Length: 291
Image 1 (cartoon, rainbow, N blue to C red):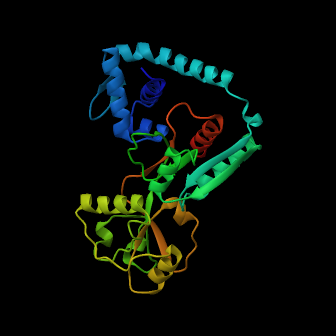
Image 2 (image 1 turned 90 degrees about the horizontal axis):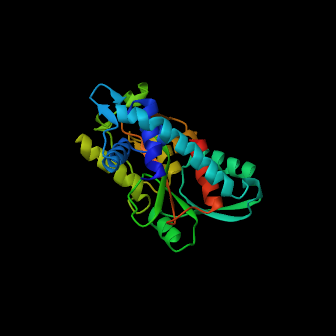
Image 3 (image 1 turned 60 degrees about the vertical axis):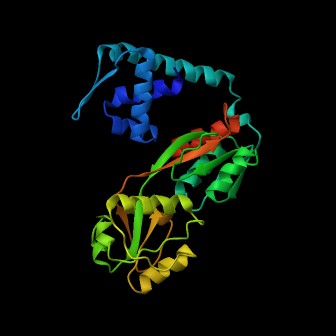
């Protein structure tokens, strides 16, 4: 049994809803279900009665809940007792980033600077595969990964979820809605960056389109996001997809940003296997607070 499994159990037990527990834990709902099923197998009991309409604790689950809550409190005290005081941390933390992390990254950095003013932060912008390789080689201490992907040889921690938005001409008929679907834009040319520039977002968007059975015509490949948005606003109708955090920072005339009716995208932090160093733990805690 792992402490993380108890965290999942307590979240579901307190929310009595797998979806809300997943949002609280900043992780996908299937992962929550898998961890709960694994815990039940290890304990040899059923902890929840699940139906399509409700989730409730079994008698065994009710007995486990106070013990699990107490264990998590005790584990938090244990970790705090041996940890170096945050405000005394020194050194350098190297973080792999990508464009468009937005205000959340600012809040993370502000939190780290406030809690540990002697820790220097170096941000390194690299493609996602290069970021992960740099963590493996020890050249980076941590790397943001978005969308979430399975990485078998590194530790990954889910830190937040983010919505996708469609950027379209403000005059487009769909711009009158606050929530749009791929079907609303199916006849309008879609513009994307080449896959090698942002494979995560490219694969995410094209995969969602396949699932929806939508194949919009393709517009010109994007080189610069700013230039592409200017062209979308001024030229023949077209559209593209951005992370909401990136869209929030953009102020482009004649462009409307509308939330897409698709599942939120999960952001992970990848780190080297094993217990995180104090500065990495500071980063993870600051990310979870920023979420």
